[in-house]
View (cartoon, rainbow, N blue to C red):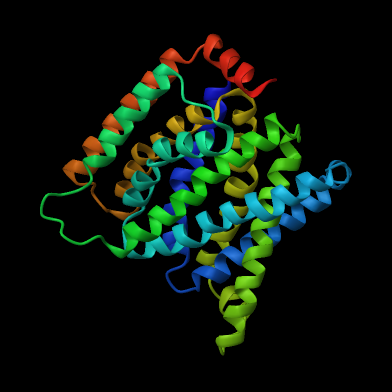
Length: 302
């Protein structure tokens, strides 16, 4: 069940990069994310206010300051990355979480990945290596932005696992803290943007662009609400390393959508990378049975 839940989030995330690229063509990317997170935070606060009142003070601190920052880094850098490269390349670079998540877990919790996870990590890193063309002498701007966003992505997975497993926060509480903390950082960024921009919050421009409004609606309903909840629910059932491996399926999903919706055909290397990443996902899925989950819980002291 956990695999199906996480894969549902993967499909939604895969389409989100295409939506962001199309919806921010004529609208400031930063304000797009600001309106998105402000709206979803208000929805969460109104719908789950009783549950949110039970959040302990230390969980508020971790969720708002650290998980919120991780999601902000992902949100701000990924939306600028898709403007300088294709959505497919962004999500393929996101596949590096397969190596970063275990590293962050070892740094914070001193937990090493299981043997089958190690094999899957090695396969995934080999897949990412296929992206680097021999003739490429310079790293593209979009690659750098996507890489920084990926670091936030990986850290959010690790922090979500801590809040669920160690701090015993509920799915709704973790989901709210992630979006509310991110909204707080985007609010600060929006204030700075408005201070230097003569257009302010661009409300008039937003109301005249139905494509942008539709994009914000998609990101609110399907990404910030549906996919966010699915990911957190999946992480309650699966180890964080396995979740990061499953999210490596994003390139396959996004490559197909990128080609069919935007007409950007993937290169041979991107295609091979996606296929090998699927292989890494299969290795993790086939080997990570109940014994793997039980060992993970034992390592966490649950």
